[in-house]
Image 1 (cartoon, one colour):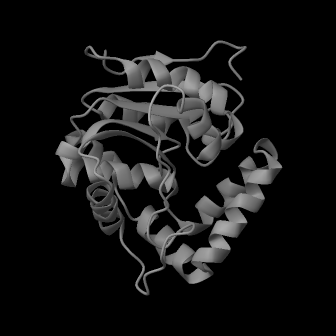
Image 2: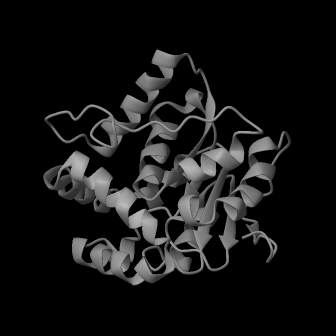
Length: 223
């Protein structure tokens, strides 16, 4: 998330926490569920003194943020769901793995080293069990109860998350809209941070009501 954080830092205070079990955070012996990861995020907010914030998630992070918005709605000002998983039509582990291989040519190669380092820190067992929790999570049903303004962001080369799924997700959100970034795959926060920030900032800095289910595409030069 660091490349995107650098783009947003001139405009807002930005935090990029590693959830328990991932990155440089502590590794609980038991693998946490999506709901437990959301509760841990709320506890982290308490620990550093954040009452309410806007949240940006990628992939599994989107599931955690939807859970946070439902379990701790007072903590969430608005949400950004980039490459949300899982698509209900491809929930199996094999389908998810195939999607990862399909997007590899369109991601920055250095992202592979970042991801592999994080997977190594967490351990293969934690990764597999977390993936099982992820594919079993019915985010499409849960977003119907998310009342906060929410921006769904999708890249045209994201073969893990189909366009039909993100459009239905944005439409299901009571206050949702969709932004499409041409040429981007699943790791937009890493590979296309400027284009991502271009669609994020108007949403994050907005003070009025947001039209529902509007589709946005950045200008071709915003790459």
